[in-house]
Length: 148
Image (cartoon, rainbow, N blue to C red; front, side):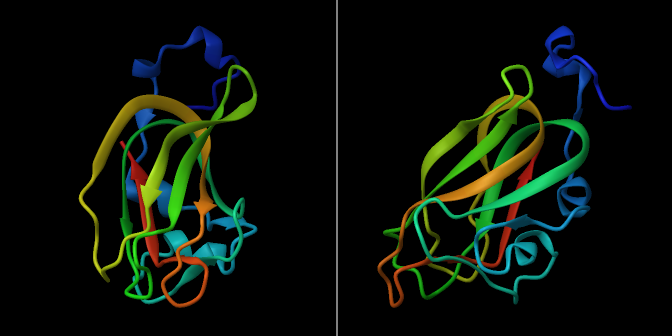
């Protein structure tokens, strides 16, 4: 499917669901430390959010619909940190929260997938909203997946 010029005229059912390959196609960028590690398909490289408001942004090659997410945690977290997942609202041209209050995962392993509302977008952000107090005051993860 080609890029949609006017997303207001297309229903979410018209978009393809983003796959893991789509999510990993463009390296993450942003203000967190080592943002490209977040979607590099390896659980041994770390991304760190050292301040509230730092983010990792993942751009998609097209408009896709997102639905589910999960994260690979880090044993240095104690679960006190929080993230939000934001999507770019194509109609209003602003960042909007998909989900807030996501705790830092304390294990070196995947969380279960969590299902949200089907949402069309061409980019997402993972934003630190509270810093984890385990060890260093920071949120640490090695991978995220935001897919359909």
